Image (tube, rainbow, N blue to C red; front, side, top):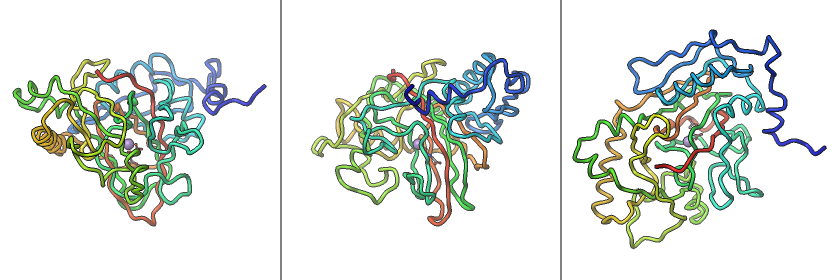
Length: 321
Ligand code: OGA
Ligand code: MN
């Protein structure tokens, strides 16, 4: 027999229903919403190594749609166990080789299923130690991922906190005139990893930071363009959210340059208000699972000589509508 892929191996090795001590009873799990925060719920009593019941998975999916991020505490997983747990919620995000993303490998053009998000640990170290500005993962691709999980393995002494923004709340808080103005607009988010390849700009960590904030029509087009709605509807809850990051190059379709760049600047300022954000102070063993369709996330910088290792799994999503 041929050898299995990591993902097949993960499901192959996962504990089975008849293994009593590996079965997690749904009554052991408590989901506690973070009161007074813009989003998030903490999940207690769940061991992600165990077999989960349908009741638990459905409850978690509902909680994710409602609270937008789920925080699992005190996990202890290897990569296969992490894959087996994550894929209860969807299949792995695998962009085409025509769409460079974080950690895309030079041979295959695609990232590994479990991406080390790290600094100074010798595991790709793709994200460095700098600030990561608010973004949704893979927003610049034809089919952005529906959600991602980050699992904290090693943490720096200082900095490196991750924040999530509730973009449903940000949309809801807009005045009616702005909602009407933007409701039918489509936005292109240009791929920062293409810009980095083309301009050989290695100075910033994720391909962010050095790009223009808005493309004027007399400027070169560096990547393929995949217009998505600026106001996105969540596929399960039906709630509307702003689908716009704060710092990469974007362009409104069929819109005046000057008016477009001003509208986007105004919306970006609005999204960045602290009342829409929750900052997570990591502890080793935390897994944060976020809905990438209705949140943005960002990271504070931390000292270059301090080690930080989180592992990320991104799950496939549908075409935004
Ligand atoms: C990511 C990301 C933030 C962090 O992995 O997609 O944005 O805190 N990470 O490392
Ligand atoms: Mn990210």
